[in-house]
Length: 431
Image (cartoon, rainbow, N blue to C red):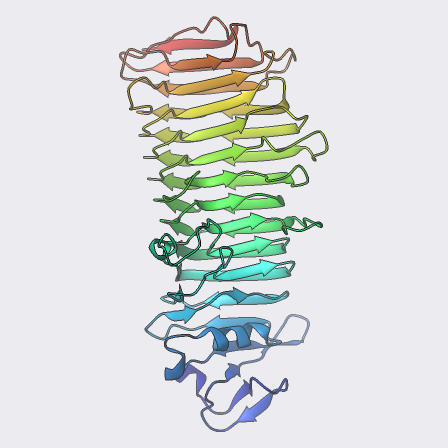
């Protein structure tokens, strides 16, 4: 057992007794508590998970027991080797702290259900998870083998219908799904996530996405690094993609994040499933960097308009070194959902032959609103090759007045093609 949990006297809570008792000797298989005074004078209890040699291959019972206790704060201490666990379920009103150096590792051979996640927060509220210098690790190669049922939902942290959740400082790697998933309860109620804060996390080498947001209200993702996502589509850094018209995308803000080396896009929003019955969406991707992605750096998708409303904004974003386009918009221009690129920069993108830096695939009747449904403001493409900067792929030869704004092209050989079917989009070259 870790020496920090065997001091005397200490407050200990056994697995069987819901009371707090004084111990005068080291306690095996218990949770040792250190109550602290809160601002209101109440005693806030902190428990440190104790581990003995019998927990080396599976510490699930010890960790879950601590989570299920009445402690305000649960600490998983650094003990020099990983904490091996099967799926854990969080409760309301708790703080989970992983000390620096801690590895919370998925047990090999477990996680057989396709939706098994290391940490699940379902229909809970007021939970914080902090792990600066700590890691949640899964084994995505195992989940692709014949011994597992195929699935893309084995997440590191899974939030379903959760409220007031904070996740900070964690390194989450090699999951069988997303590093972090934010979504609804997949039942008739379809409860959404509300007031979610994700900051200072590193999501690396996950199977489907670094972060997926399916349904949320007041969701902020800040200062996160999302790298090397690969395995199954979309393989993005951050994917914002509702699964049902009842899902909500309200006040979604991704800020100052870096997506590097992902097999999919850096940051994308697919809102095809939103309808006239859906609440208006508001999504803002701001101050983010995409570097070295295979698929388009920034991507917005609405294949067919079903009456959804709202706005998707990419603001002050930079995209570098992509194989496909720097930005792709696949859009029904009759939609009342607007897409806007403001102060965005693309450099050394679309390296594959036949690909343009900006790729627009448009359907619909072209959009007749005085406000463009797709708009570029102060957008700059740095180009080295003589080619068209904007490629238009349309379902018919017609004008699309719903695309507007200006794209500046800079570089010694940058092309500045004006697309005749986009009369309200100016493309201007600057040497």
